[in-house]
Length: 253
Image (tube, rainbow, N blue to C red):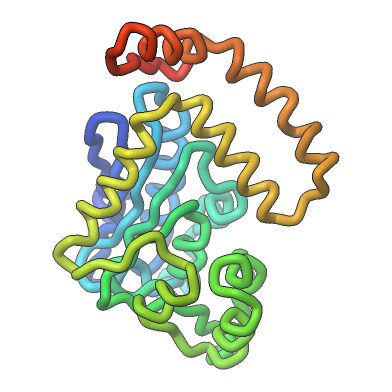
């Protein structure tokens, strides 16, 4: 299967929808999926006509983690590691339609906002096979579900349901399976109503603050972002559109 087949990309106005497309393998991570996902993320970030992205899976899984057969064949999944380390500059929404396990959970945790169906199962199961969630899962979970639940998930390897994830504060919304994707897209479209540079800067600062960076460092980080955003064409367009009582025409510049 080629990268183009392993990852499907659709554009809906200012939103890119990225679908992990190996349903027969529960969208397990192999070389084609790894490369295709990272290429799609780079395309999202490079295109000024796009403001936000949605990642989901085809079939009954979001992503079941590493494809061990592909790993044994030596397939290159390096781009997936790039993704979970760097994420995207633009907001990403994970639409968890089923199993999001091990590396699949770590893909979800790389997203900024999460929406899940009531059929979702989310977990880092690596301890059950003698490993640990080395792509960010063990240290990103506490910020999403709290210390106690994160520790329980990491040490038992047992997944939580969509309802448990919602109760833990991990999700923005919990939906029926048939409503999941449209709910995620609607959230992305609400984000895309806003100025792209301002959205990206806001995301960067919120994520930095959530990571525990000292406030002095946050102020330093804000200075170049403020200079870039406040001097942009969109910073002129926003007030003009408000004064003229019309929808703004964002260009991302």
